[in-house]
Structures are given as structure tokens and as C-alpha cells.
Image 1 (cartoon, helix red, strand yellow):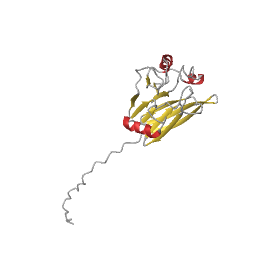
Image 2 (spheres, one colour):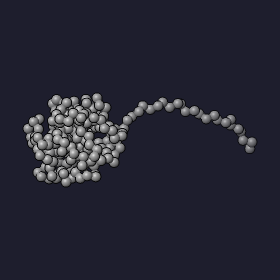
Image 3 (tube, one colour):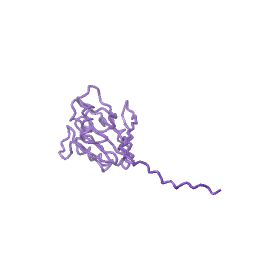
Length: 209
């Protein structure tokens, strides 16, 4: 089992000052093996905070990230699963499902993690799983008129199965929703079998009696 924190669009300190306190109480060191940030971590202090939760932190570059060492996309392998990570500003309009599916085919991955919309979303299409963890701080987004709900996701990866726990801060309380995905089994064409060979029958002997 691997527990992965998927987080993004924090926008600290430009649009908000910190993660919600109730989220920080949940993100304790020693429980999470890996962190994947889908972009807009923005400042070094926030990045270093994530490293205190887990030293294994992977970040893709968002449209507000200045760090040139963050790649625009990456692929992370948890065999038999392959996970593609992008920020999502490559899609116009933001969050367009057809474009995300096309990117998934191009990256040849089973799971696509993206952000940019600041809104949690999860769905399965053509055997692939798409997850947007939303904005962990509930930072304002010009893409949608409504105020975002702070959210992040935890992936419990066990072989081909991903159980996603989505944490949302609604009316001051943390609510959890569960989504499950199983990678479809690969169907290989059956190898033609040779025709059965009939055993040679021994000659029938008439009884002497």
C-alpha cells in the first residue's frame, strides 16, 4: 500500500496566507509516503512545509509558479499503474474533459492528476481515472464565479486499485468522500491451441472365455 497526498493551487502568499488549520491537523508527518502537487505551490516556504509532511515531493509547474526547475508535466510509476501529472492550464477551456483525455492518451497513463480550476473533480473515462484535487486553500479563481471549497485528496494505491479520499472543508467542517478506481485488466488475444491428439488405441482382443 502507498498513501499519496495530491494537492494543488495553494497560491500562498498571493491569494491566501496559509492552509486551513483543520487540514494541517490532518497532514501529520510519518503517514504519507509521497506528495504530488499539481501546481501553484508558489513559494519556497510552502514547498518546505510539504517536505515536512513527506520528504518525497513532486511538483509540476503551474501558471503562478516561478521555479523553472518544476517540469510542466511528469509521469510517476506505481506498477502496474502509471500516473500523469499536469497543472491543467494547457486545457482551454479549463478542465475540458476531452482535452484531458487526449493528454492521457498522449502520455499513455492510467491516471491523470491536474489542477487549475480550483474545483474538485473525479471521473473515469475509457478506462482511465481523472482527478482534480481542487484548491487546498480555497484560493480565488477567475475561471469560476463561485468561491472554491478548500480540498485535497489522498490516494490509497494497492496494485491496480486506487481508493481516493477527498477532503473538503464545508461550513467549517472537514467532510470526506471516497472514490474507487480499478485499472482494467489487459486482454491479450488467445494463442491458438493445437488440435487435440487422440491416443492410439490398442487392438481389441477377444476374450478367451
